[in-house]
Length: 144
Image 1: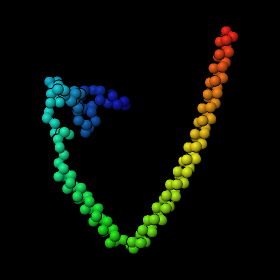
Image 2 (image 1 turned 120 degrees about the vertical axis):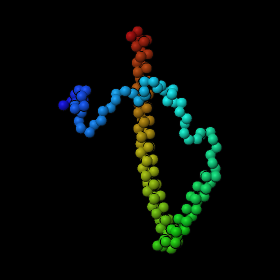
Image 3 (image 1 turned 120 degrees about the horizontal axis):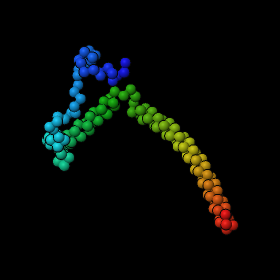
Image 4 (image 1 turned 30 degrees about the horizontal axis):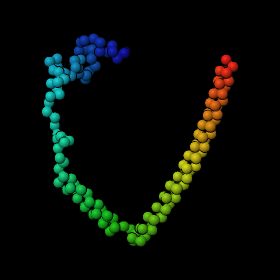
């Protein structure tokens, strides 16, 4: 059965059980207007009001203190000495830098290939345009 015919009759017995009847009127009552709806007082503060810098300073101080405590805890519970940790980080940075360098080299090569291809196509197009212009000039001189 089609969806529209399911609810086509107006009697309550034609609705499936558990479905409430909905009014087909708009959200606004007939006496309301959009102006009346928009005149309600807005909530919150204006963007033009000054920010409470004290609250921002307290938040920033909390973030800085948390970062310091986290760094201290990481140093206390680190499974390696500081020298071993620095060496491990240095090795990882070199490997990462090498991979990035390889990828940049590949991208540079691909870009060069696309640039050469584009210049070649541009030269061909310009040459064909010049030929078409010369042909047109010849036709005009001969009177078509």
